[in-house]
Amino acid sequence: MSQNPSRLEAGTVAPNFTLPDQDGTNVSLSDFAGQRVVVYFYPAAMTPGCTTQACDFRDSLGSLAAAGYQVLGISKDDPATLKKFQEKESLTFPLLSDQDLSVHKAYGAWGEKSLYGKTVVGVIRSTVVVAEDGTITLGWYNVKATGHVASLRKKLGLDS
Image 1 (tube, one colour):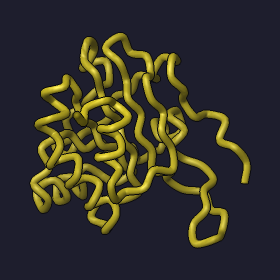
Image 2 (image 1 turned 90 degrees about the horizontal axis):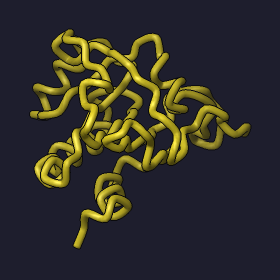
Image 3 (image 1 turned 90 degrees about the vertical axis):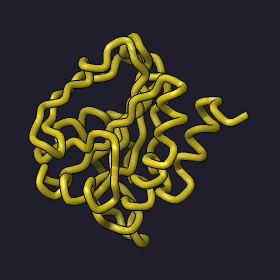
């Protein structure tokens, strides 16, 4: 399996983006300048792993926000699907629609991955943390949905 050359590393500037959210309102990374942002990419709304991960972020949102982090979820789902997902799971952070996969590709969250022993091309479950100055502090790829937020909190030094 080839290494994905577009994976983002700490110290690089996060690519800006503007995508519609679950309500069709455009949201840009630059809207959060001066804040820390957790941008996570997931394969599909309302699937078991993605629901587990989204609910973990929902349940940790208060402590992440208290530590100065905004959470943005990005998938290739259309805004209407994201709205259903948001309502069904009571998600309280923006879900962004990247149907042409341009942001997935810019962030290294689209490419070859192993699925049940086969190499396929698709969404690579990924989390990128952007600092207040727009640089990346963490680029984390091929993450597991279950337990991801707890692991992320440890990497961010948020668990005492």
